[in-house]
Length: 170
Figure 1: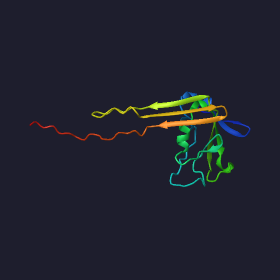
Figure 2: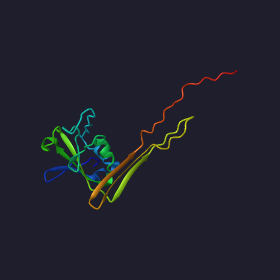
Figure 3: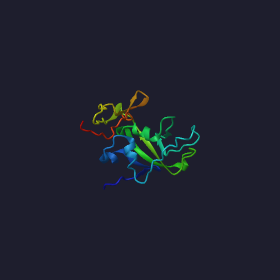
Figure 4: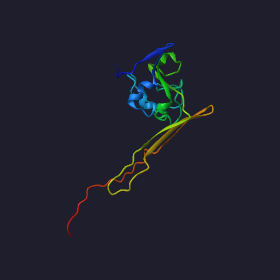
């Protein structure tokens, strides 16, 4: 008890989404991060094109692609409630150039509509309150079309910190 149980069916090794409930994940990213022995490989942002994959994540059997998208961002936009299971695969069997070692395939079934949000306002002495730090992600399905939408303003940092001050009597 207490550990995730790797299951196998028809030659596929996987974790059921229900096993992650005790971690109270909000996103697929939070689920992937607690898989025993699995380490997310981050994208090499210096590489160009789609010649070789550098990440070890698939979503519904398809690798994450896009100029400004990576596996961590994509997984963060998938709500935990839409994840059915996490499959562990051998990258050498996938026929995807550049992928080797252990790969995780996040199998989803989007709800009609679900989402997550986080709000982290900042309050600093002698500065205006910053109430706009937030991120909102939604996923869903309309007829045969699945969608994921994310809005992130978490970089709404306000600089302008105050240095030391000296007060002197006239």
